[in-house]
Length: 563
Figure 1 (cartoon, rainbow, N blue to C red):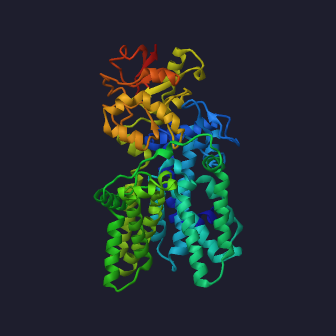
Figure 2: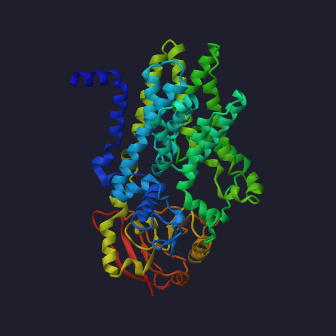
Figure 3: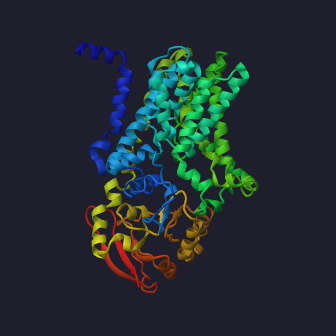
């Protein structure tokens, strides 16, 4: 028994070592728990709370677009994740941080094995060194993915491997591969990335049809089946968009894309080199130089690395498409075609990371096979990229820049004190937050008039604007940010800008807050939770009730009531 296990380990020792490294990467989530430092942007300030709110709402399954009272006096149910989203059920079954850790674990191992299988079965026709297949796969698994995306980006290689397997083997494809393919939609986002991925699979199907003059029905079935699952999964979103006129989304008034040609050109190269905050591949310092060296070797050796060149140029095209989607020249299209304004076609750039790491593997293979010291260069490149990415694990990265831990960010004990002081059922009053994300109050059970969501009623956006109009007038940047996008319904403060993290070590007072408290009361506002003192509170008709702080929390909260 032990001998068999040892032989198995030695036969696949590099895969096991990679799994151990991924496990080490994940350990902070399991050891530190809520004391882990994790990403704030589009994570603790939003998605985690959306999942928690939905899990506790009793409205996970609903045929109607039921409003949830926890935010903006009734946040439409369709604006929150689908009941067929597997991550939702992690938050139902476990505490939020545990659910988060499990989601991260699934994401990392799916990324590793998906890329490894894709490289070994389809990218390389011949067997290559384990450094060329396991190395890039391990690096890909440790990318700083957008946490709530689950397999939306990390699962692309796995999905491609499964589709190519079905395309190649047809109905003889093992059933477990079909099952794996059908599970991916429950752990990924259609609108974010897979709508583009499936479009490319559809294009490949058409190309095959033309080239071979024969329909590949199993491949078509795979594409149609995954698309159908996504449609069923997103039934609430689809019905609210096309059949239910219960509310007009604020997205109808999106006015994005006013970059000059020069800025768009600059942004294209920025994305090509450094990626987007949600899909960073960290390609600039190691991967791209390795690719360029490999291409020079190919020219010198008179080779034709078609896959490498094609994918490299494809990523360049994607970067330019992403950047020029925000070019002012597109306004004539966006202003006249609704879907071009409300749907972000630039998101195809979420395919970038998978393409970069396939290119990395192809470049390493060229160096390994055609350069005298290429093996050494390839090994050093793999090790360097993995060290770089391991150092970007959330605990290391966000601890080093000093953001709060999960427990500190939400500070449940502190907000329990505030709830106790108010002494009413939380559903009986409404609050807004200043100097901190409103999802912190939402996490702690408060009903908020401010929020951050992908969609909400346009009418409410206009009503909320009346409250903060005075502050928006003082800041053209904030005014444009709110009016042209507006996904963050925040109590903006001109002197704060887009900074929503005023911890107690930097809580300088607001000297002149220009908000309309009458409009706030008309909307139902009762209290303001402010992370900084408001010096003109009496002038605004606010009553400073009490200040709350404790040693465990990084926040100091001034509670104001409206007279």
